[in-house]
Each structure stands twice: as C-alpha cells, then as structure tokens.
Amino acid sequence: MTQLHRRFDFLSKRARRGVSLLWIIIAFPALVLFLVFAVEIGNIWLARIELEQSLEANALAAVKQWAESGGGDTLAAREVGNAFSIANPVRGQDVDLTDMTLNTAFTNGPNLLNYDDSGMAANPNQNLVCTDISNYGSYLQPGVMVFGAIIQTENLANPAESVVFNADVIPSCASPGSVLVDANGSGGLKTANNHEWGISFKAIGDALAQANLRIYRIDINVDPDGSRNYEFTGSLGIADTVNNDIIVGTGMSSGLSQNDNYLQAITTADIYFTSPPGSPEILQINFSDPTFPLDAINPAIGLVPGDRFRFGAEVVDTTNVNSNSQVNGDEVGDVAEVTVYFSYAGAPDSVEMGTLVDTMDKGNNCGGNAYIFTDAINNDHVIVHPTNTVDLPCPDNASAGSNGQSYVTIGSSGQPHFYAVRAQATIGVPSVVQSICGFNLGPWGVSAKATAYYDCETSDPKLIRVDLFQCDPPPP
Image (cartoon, rainbow, N blue to C red; front, top):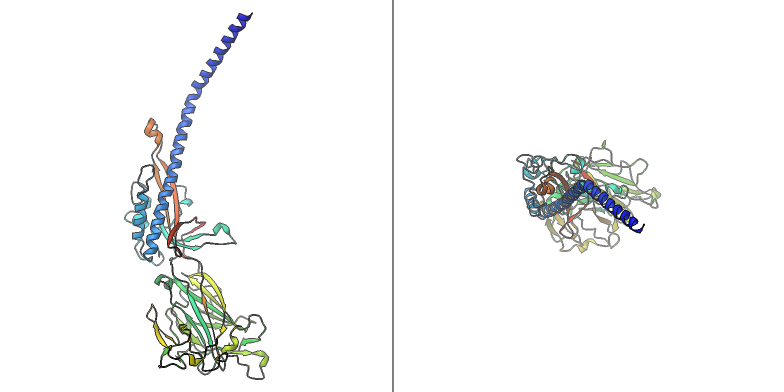
C-alpha cells in the first residue's frame, strides 16, 4: 500500500507540472503583450515629461528675453525660446518648433513660431493665431508660442479663474500710475479764476504703460459720512468750461507759469461733470459721452499719463445758508474722499480711493524752490510747492492751516500685467517596441504646454499655472 500511494503521488505531481506548463504556454503571448504595452506606455510617459520640460525652458527663456528687452516686437524672444526647446530634446529628438516635419499647422508656412508682423492693432503681441492646445482633440493645432499678459492673479469669487492669461493685453513692468487731486481756494472753491480744483495724472513708467493706462472716471465726495452737510451747488457749482487760466505761483522768485490744461487723447469738451440723483455731495467727472453708462468704459476716452486740467466747483455748507456758506480748500481737507477709476488696455483695472489732506504749508515757503520739470513726453510742469510735488500750486500767503489748500496723491495698485508666454506643442514620438521588435506601432502624438511670466519685482521668469486662457480683447 505504501508503494502504491507513493506512485499515485508521483503521478499527481507530474500532472500538476504539466498543467502549469500548459498555462505558461497559453499566457506567454499575453505576458509579452503586457510587457510591450508597459514599455510603450513608459516611453510615452517619459516623452510627455521631457516635452513639458522642453516647453518650460522655451517659455522661461522667451519671457525673460521679451521683458528685459522692454516688450514690443516678439520675434527675437520667440527665437530665443525655440533655441532653448531645441536644447532640451524629447527621447533624443530635437523640439524645433519651426520644423515643418513636426507639425505643419504649427508653423503656418512662412510665419514661423506663430509670429505675425503685420502690425495690426487688434493683435498687439504679434500672435498669428491664438489657441489653447487643451481645447482640441487633434494635436494638429496652431500657436506653438503665444505671447500675452497675466492680467489677474487672484479671484476669490471664482477660484477656478484666478490666474488669467490674455493674449490681447500688452504687458508692462511700469510703476503704478498716480494722480494728484488738489483743492486750492481761500475764499471758496469757485471764485473769479475758476481753477480752484486741479487734477494731474503723472506720467511715470514705460511707454507701453503710458499708451494703455487711462483714468476714465473720478468721483469727489465732500461729505462721505454725512456729518458736514457739504454739497456742490446749483448746476453743480461748476465753471461753465474747463478753462485755460495760467497759474502763477505765489512767492516765487521768478515769473514761472504753466497752462492749466494739458490733454493728449481728449479735449475739454470730453470732460463731463455730473452728480448722482439725490447725492449733491458727490461730483462725478466722466471722460466720455454722458449717455455712456458711468460704470462702462469707452477705451478711446480718458486721461492719459501726463494730462492735467483745472476747474471750478463751488462747495457750500448747507447748515450756514444764511451766512457765507462757501467752503474753502482747507475745510474740505481731511474730509473729502476722492475715488479714481483706472483702466488698462480698455478694460477696467483698479479703483483707488484717498482723502484730501489739509496742508500746513504757506505761500512764502515757496521761495526759490520754483523750477521747470520736463517729463518723458516733453511736457513742461511748474514745480513751485515746498514739497516739490509736480503740478501742485503754491499755497496762498496765509498762516498755516488757513492757506485754502488740501491735496492727495492716489496711486493705482492695479491688476498685474506681467509679461507672459505660453509654449505648447504636440510631437510624434517613435515607438520603442517597434524599433526593438519590429512591431507596427506608433508614432505616438504627445502634447504638452507651459506658461511662464516675468516677475517685475525680482526680475526673474517663473512658471505659472493658468486657470483661464483668453484669446479675445477684454470686453469694453
């Protein structure tokens, strides 16, 4: 019996070995196929990573070149970016975005690297076409390099659209714009000369910023908390026209003077004074047709950096109607709030607020401080004030606190308009398995994109994830 059991055990083991071998024979093709797909997927995955790194190098180099060249023409920056993508190959293959064999739609014939030098105003960043490669199923998409600006970096109301890239906004590293608003009137703010209020938009920053930055509306509220009972009177108490009176600083050692008004893109006829119904304490100054909604923008209208104008607008204290109720420049100081509405490239930008501050400077402090300042656009400004504030008149020769002068300088923090470049491409990746085993596989289309912006504060290019990619001009 013992020998019989041993024989059956031996036969059983041989049977099991035979079944295992049979399963191995049956499963071997499947294992080979699995190995083929694993190797191929790994190759595609590595190609995708390498392509993204190549495009990151492209975008970083291009945006640095563009920003540090002061913007403008993009061809040199495109070529620099392409040189960096070539220097970072994918699976041994150069990523030359001008190579017709990679993708003919990317090159657009003679317009290599998606460059358009036609000079069309509607295409400020010279992109022949503007597409986001993520929006299409096919990898034959144009627009390998798209130049534009990061116009928004935060949106608490809609985090999904926090970082916004717009290809139709001209970027800039300009300093924020600033506007000077002053009230200079000892006997009131609308006397015979009719130029007691002044507004001066300072011309700072680079030429691109000056070409796109505007002020499209200014509000002056002389009684923001309702405690003073101040209001603008009559037909808003405004002079019939924004005049061209000459300011002659008091106490100057020489007869320096300047024209009150210097307007580049508009005329005095484009300045409209209104007041909200039921709010006589607010003066709204709009730089477009009054039929235009006050919360809208006419991109062609507005104060340009360098502009200035003066006007008269009487303010009265309604609690003293039986006596001299005119309010002077000192009395609106530390009370009146000024709100400035900035736009950039025709789109709403920042809304900034400041309060007029009563000064303690006297006219006889001007002394020998008067001189002429010529700005970047060859516009002369008289500087007479002890603080050397551009376009601020010298205060009256009166005691401190009784000089009729208050003023505030309001800066535009604004939304950022960082230089930005999107590099995007799809390339054909040869099959590794085909090259080894001769299988008829590939090539595979691998897509990637990368966006870089130029940090104006640190002077460094940085990668950024874009939530919203825009190819259309900002809405008016």
